[in-house]
Image (tube, rainbow, N blue to C red; front, side, top):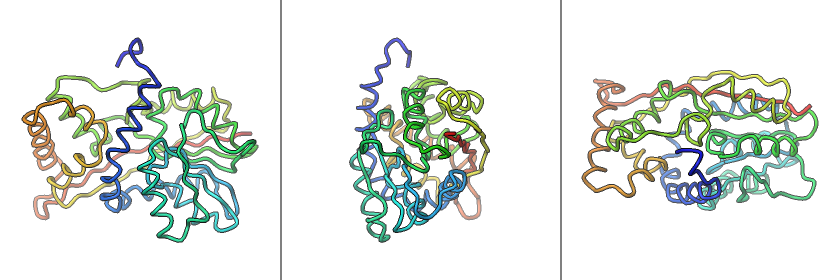
Length: 291
């Protein structure tokens, strides 16, 4: 994806359509993912120093995290606004919150993360984003707008993925697709799962936006599936970038890609006794203060 032919508005439309298309897959696999991912939600609310009674914004919430985790902390005297570009993902998140009795605490709204349209003069005590910043085509603009929504002394706490070799959970399937299609994935600066893996550049972006006391840490996140076949099915159901890449390919090509994903998962990450496949991945958590 070259900058010359990259259109941010078209990209956002494509993103909304892609995430809408995998919303049911996220609902199906949510528990499997949260066994590993919940630790990131927990850490983000700690880094943001979220407390009872606060007002919190969760950007790119998907189907509700870390909004729901934050909602349990702020309680009835607080409020969480959960924002996402995909109405289908939001609908599932809203139902999840209702099932937990958090419908009066966590509010779900469709919004562009780079140009958030909320209440007039609305500000938040803390802002969260779990694995969403990587998909924003205008990160500098987004971070500047996000900071303006924070009260003085409020924190932005976000999680992104590390470099591809340290995130096999995502990279294995994407690498298989890349090899079969003989194409490359967006690199540093272009939206994608690994676009913010360079911690130094990410910190510079936050500082440029006016955040202070910027600090980061790396956290291991483990995802486990009952079998390599389950891992492949997960990718088919949920991984929007690969679904988009394969959408115009022949059935034979798609079958080759998915068979390769299964074989590579068995070869590299399978426990020979149980058949389970286990991926240990590196996430980066970063926090910045609006002084």
